[in-house]
Image: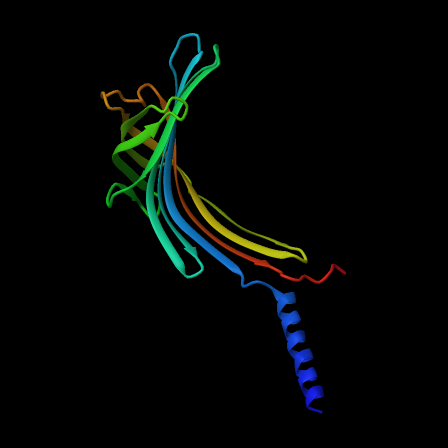
Length: 215
């Protein structure tokens, strides 16, 4: 009799374990929100149109939540390149650094913004040469803004993903300088385009450990 009781308990416990395995891992949850301002600048450096210069500058003010953990950061990113499309020679350098309080300012309504970040280290990955640039850019809204909302979801017997996003994009007039260590403005004679954005995103993912076969 006792053996039968223990046998029944074992079967029940084993069934519960199988049911748990057939359910799912705890869901992974991520959320992101942040403000950003960026500019792209272009210049033709030679009369034959071969030599081309471009620069991309972005400032981020972002917050990421992973489950119960939350991290915030402010970052500046700089990319500069000179390309010769006649000889197919390309040189570029890039880098980023954390921003200090007050170096990046973006209006929550995306009407204006400014980025003043000295001593941003940028490096050429091929030669290993590094230098520093000073960023001084401001943004003023032009028209807009434009809002984008949506959601995506996918589900299989093995996993389930859901994502929602809400983003506002604001075209902007970008003006300012990007100065190297000898005082050259790397944006001189460039045509620049700018924008600011406010983005939010929520993501949820669940993996099934012992999925049921598709019907």
